[in-house]
Amino acid sequence: IMHEMGKIYCEEELWDHAERAFNESLRIRIVQLGQDSGEVAESMFSLGFVYTSRGDDLKAQKHYEGSLRIYKTKLAKSDPRLGDNFSSLGNVHHSLGNRDKALFCHNQAIILYTGIFGKHDEKVALSLACKGDILRTNERYVDALSCFTECLDIRKSYEGSMLSKESADVLCQMGLIYSTLKDNANAASCLSSAVTTYKQIFGAKHVKVADVLYIMADHFVKVDELERGYSCVKEALALQEELLGKTSAEAGYSQYCMGTILFAWNEFEEASKCFAIARESHIQKRGATHISVAKSNFYLGCICEKVGDLESAVQYLQDSLAGKREHLEKNDPEIAENLTRLGHVYCERSEWDSAVDCFSDCLKIREAIRDTGTSSQILVADALFDLGTALNKALDTKRSMQLFTDALKEYLRHLDQHHLKVAKCHSRIGEVYEKENELTKAISSLQKAASIYEHNFGAGEPREKEVKALKYGNDYAGQAE
Image (tube, rainbow, N blue to C red; front, side, top):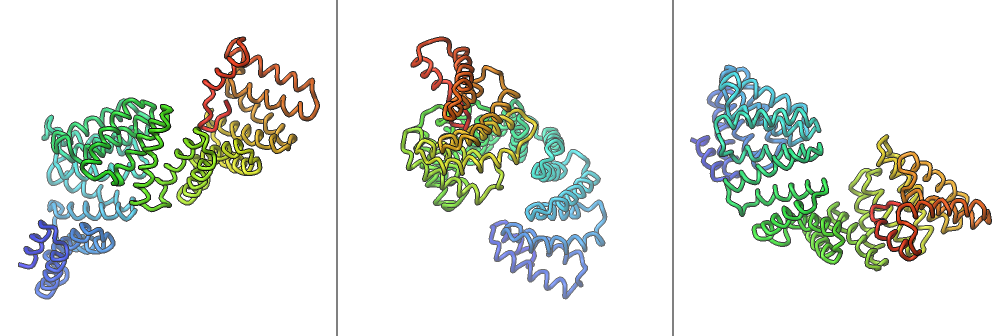
């Protein structure tokens, strides 16, 4: 009777009542039937379910392991309760970060379920989905996709064209993997199918719909399809504000995503509003030191620099840098980008020593994470150039000359000889020679720079060239144009 009462309480999600009922059931069964009876295992398994539902994974693990130990000796391999136990224990291990144990458990569940029900059963599909999620967390993306695809094939065999919520969840997971693998077409296809399925099941106004629309927006931003990204995030934000409230964490993330798109479109006033809302939302929901606050601070600093409010720019960028250093690895590219932007603001304020410190730290990171890819090599060259510029302004011409020379070598290795970054290096080298009164060398370097500018912009009037150089020389990624 106590066990049946516990099941009723579980249906009502009255977890404290369910725990008491199952504990009483367990006590009575141990006294009446002994510690190793199948009924004791049943009560222990039910307690594991209660603790899982309450988020107490350690207690859940203890009870699932206890029930599994008994079931292994009492049940035949054709009993599905053994598979249920392995599956539940696998989920707990995944939640606790014990991924190898989680994989073992789900593999056992798949073998048992397949032997009992055949390979086209929902329990097999569910365990494959859980296994795929673990593999995705382990960045074993190809193996994860294999599990998810097999899971969907099983479900399609009995769901037909009308997919279930569980199938939509799998499609969303697959979309995330394809996005990580930069497979734009498959990512968009999977995520779009997930949205369509959720709308069919829950209606257009549902949190699940908003969640996937946000994921789609984030993906489209990463692949520079900003129009599609804006369309998705606009719809996601409207749903989140209606269903969860304007100050919800979810709405904050969408505001941030929308801000990045508007920033890329140079719509700085509207972007600033989005980042300010996102920042306040994340401060309220996550705390002032959360990484999402640091990310919003970075863009707000960039916008303040753009509109000439350099004092606010420094403050936002310093706060952003502190937050990123607290939460990210010391050589994370985002920290390098933050240092670059802050260094440029210090340059605009003629605070050369502070700029040198920023660019020096940035260069250390760029060199530490340097790989054989062209973009990585160019970022190192950019850092060399930026540090050289600051040192040149600080009148350390010897070090700045070496840095400009090193940057020029890198640019010429990876870029066309007429690239604007090459011209900038020649120009800076010419300036250093001029300061050192080596005028012949200065003229030679400056003529090389002028030749590249004329190649790119034509032989117009100086003011016309200046306008063109500004138009094609956006510096916001810390680059040298």
